Amino acid sequence: MSDTGHHTYQTNLTWTGAAAGFADYESYDRTHQLAAPGKPTLTTSSDPAFLGLPELWNPEDMLLGALSSCHMLSYLACCARARITVLDYTDRATATMVENGKGGGAFTEATLRPVVTIAQPDKIEHARRLHGTANKVCFIANSVNFPVHHEADIRVAEEG
Image (cartoon, helix red, strand yellow):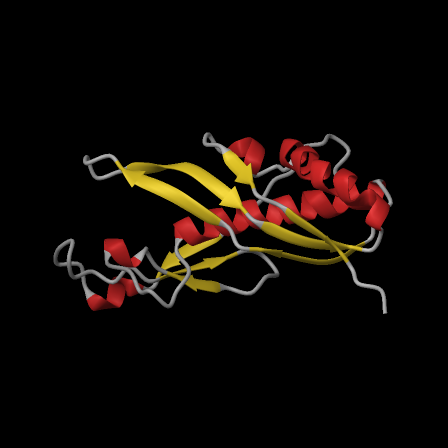
């Protein structure tokens, strides 16, 4: 953390589809690259509903992925502080975006469905409650203007 508590991030975006031309809405190539200093470059596109390439990440995927990732990182931090041993964590997140009929739209909600395996049977309820705490401290969840729901499944590792 910086001394001031302020953090700055930088990305560089390059539209790589320019070589294909720009005749009209239906035909231009939406492929672009997203880079950040010292990190791998992502080749991205628009959602296929908006004529993008389905095999590439799109901004909507990345927003949901950021929510899911940030929640997991916040949750793991909460569990570590509570001395709850997390052995496994997966999430099957979904989100809804609604078009407004004017060429734009907005996300209306997201649901995270983490499946978490912990080591201590006596801490299962505490581990479940920590999802609420994680949501309160998640930087990304605190930055969006739509609800982020949680349907957590907390499991205890089988002994053996």
